[in-house]
Length: 377
Length: 94
Image 1 (cartoon, rainbow over the protein chains, first blue to last red):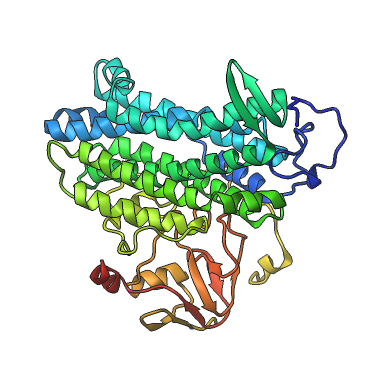
Image 2: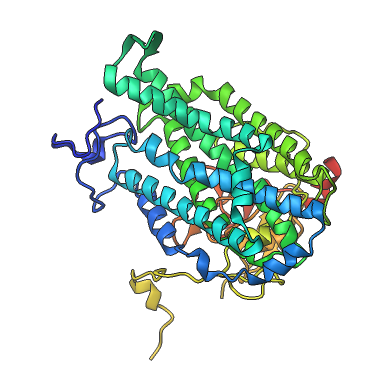
């Protein structure tokens, strides 16, 4: 497996696996092995939005009037969201693109990463508006122990995969000593690293993001920081799509029809995947403690957020074929979060002052004879 | 004229009005069902189907196991049996 930006070997792309086949040459979408990725691209494009479209001016005075412990909750939450999207805006491209072998999946990965960069830019838009010196917020991200701890956990699976891919593509399978360090390199292990990385991305999008959304929407439930909430709604809508994509990729890998060895890889990673979910849930609970260290806010506290973390962890584990980790967490302690994350063609949140976005390019141009069935002259 | 369809859950049996989606029916009757997009792409509302058949006007984007359906966008073709419980019961056990 050698990466080329344009492989000169003529191949039938429909016969390639998702990853580790021949590098993609012609970017063509007239035929697709997995049409789902093309559909996800189209959906993501129809969701396109710009941070500047959202008016966040009211948030400035809202923020000024928050008590100090709520300022801490709001800003810390925002810092965490900045961290998550900083990682997601680049890592899928760097880690997955050299390994992918289907054009529709390759383009999905790029579309996905790009949408994360919009999220990153929207945080700057929010922060510029609420504080005089944005650097105060941004500079602290790299100096805040609580954030850095989790950054390491999220990025290590990406870094592992990227490093191992470099070894494999440069040196091939075998035992290699590089700079005095010995590495056992083989394709099975590389596939394991990819699977675990995909699972870790799934955890990030399935749990970590939603914990942060809960905090953002808890303010908006009280009609505070509503501009921020509108932006987070748009982000949540994108993230739901990204989450579905990683769930598809993971399930296709587990089935083994795409690459039989991947099913074996998935089985060998089963225990570690469960551990990963549990560990993330634990880490999010510790984060909740830090958020509410000086006091909780109306509608959300340490205990409720912990219950939500367990509930959502169960829900997301089931979606990728894992047994739920928390037996007792059977109900959603904050059902109002769904109204905030729901698609905005239905105006379900009564406090919504205006529909925060509109869809572009959503027209379905296909028409069948049945569609005219009720039509009379 | 479309007829109401009978839905059996873990805790009760109700009639689904032709004007409502299965998700709306489950919410109306107090079931513990998650949702987000309400249009088939997020998969949050997925439930296990024990018996009955459904169809989709448009194939949903969310990943579904063979025995799973999306209440937000499926159209029941016959009486269904789904594994969803009431909210009140979920709260008690928590």
